[in-house]
Each structure stands twice: as C-alpha cells, then as structure tokens.
Length: 348
Image (spheres, rainbow, N blue to C red):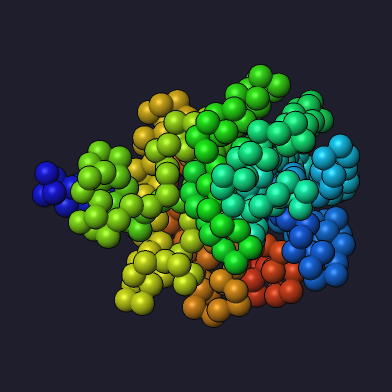
C-alpha cells in the first residue's frame, strides 16, 4: 500500500504540460485590527490598498468581540465602514470589488479566537457553552441578516480553521465542535440560501501526506503525522479554503527545505484538492496566500511571493486571497511584489 502512495507522489511531481485553467478571482484579506494597532484609520488603509490593487474580492472579518461588546448590544460599525469604503471605490472607479464576510467566534488574525470578555473563558468547553447561548446566536443571526442582501456580498466564510486547534498565549483548546459548525452552516443556509459558504483549514506538508490522510489515515504516523482537516472542511461547505504558508516557525522540515521546494509541494496539494473538490461540484480557494514575512523575518522574500503565484496559477483555483497586505503599505518593494503576484494569478 505504501508503495502505491510513493508512486502517486512521484506522478504528482512529474513534469506535465501546463493546461491553463480559468483565472481565479483574486484579492486579499483585510483586518481593521492591524491598522488600529498601528494607530491608523482602517478605512483609509483599505482605500489605499483598493486603489493599488483593484481586487476582485476582499475578505473582511465580522469580529464577535467588536460587533457585540455586551450580550444585548450590537454594533456593526467596524464592518460597515469597510464595506462603505469598498462601495465608494466601486462607484468612483467603475470596479466590481465584492466581499467575503467571515463570521463566528474563530476569525482570522491573532489571537484567532475573537471572543468578547463577557462570554467567559477562552478555552473549551467554555467556548462551546458561550456559542450555545442567546447572546452569541443574536450576533451570528444578526450578522447574516444584515449583509445577506448586500450587492457587494460574494460569499460567507463560517469560522476560521474551525476544526483545527490553534493554541496560543491568549487562547486554550479552541477548536469549534462539529455540532456547532453544523449549526452555523445550517443557519447561514437557512437565512441566506443565495450565497456559498467556504470552510477553511490547512493541509499537510506534502500531497503524499494529504493522500494518506484521506485514504489511509492509519498510515499518517509513518510520514510524521497528519495535518489540518481539509477533507472535513470540504464536506462541510461549498468551498474548501486552504491557508498556505511557505515560511514560518511552525512549518515542519523548515530547517532543511527551501521555500521554493515547499511552494512546489503546496502546488501539488492544490492539484490534489482541486481535483477532489471539483469532482464533487465544489470549489477550492486559497484563503491565505502568504504575502508577507512571518513576524518580520527575512527568509520569505518578495521574489518568493511572485514565484509561488506562478506555481499556484498553474492549478485550477477558484479564489486566491493574499495574506498580509497591510504590511505592503509600509514597503514599496512588497507592494510592487504583491501587485505583480496578483497580476500573475489573474492572467488569462
């Protein structure tokens, strides 16, 4: 059996004619928190990025802690100001930039769990108990109802890497239960059947490990263990959203592999998951294309971003969202690399 997967891995890595697929929708994720932490106006930062990149999509967070500062009060200002900035950009330029809204206790950007203080302890089972309460359900249902008719809405993202545990110094065990995720996906479908749902996760180090995790999970310890939950995320939503990072302290084999090699492994993984998703009538997104160094380290370069865009464009992606674009505002070199990468991903 193991020999079969070795052969499959070799085939995935072999040279083959490039068949150009339709270009994905290309854009970026934007969090107001990054601007706020730098004492800048989030809407103004977003306007600068819109003018510089003219994205197809912008992924925005509907942070639970910002939207619901108390159990009985809702305040969507943090979302509305950013949506208004995009609407103004479209009106001014004739563009058609749309938004992907991320809802749930888990949302993108550290500390991953954006839970208000009133909701209790930042670890399971307390997170789950808070999500079962009326306060959380008020936030969740009001978010869907408020934006479902917006002409800018492209899709929903429900939670962020909900099935994965991302423990840090502010959050304990924080994976969202499958039952809670099922409820949230069901509520979005009930309240807004017109828009698709993407569920995010990360994949294993190589496509061989992905193959094993799907077909022979009992063999994954042979190659160093499993990964995130891509097959479960694909099953839960209309699109699988992969978060692809090429360089960070958390990447296995980082000390003896290059960024370029790891980009090729991610490209092979995209080929595998794209085939699997499209065979089910679903989509594959890269919700986080690494587009900045990790915490200011210099081992991931602007050239690495451009090279990874070339690799990813060869696969059948439906959406590609770059991660870390807020840092481009402080670097002409990274801004130029980001613009080039987006042009490559959009190439016909």
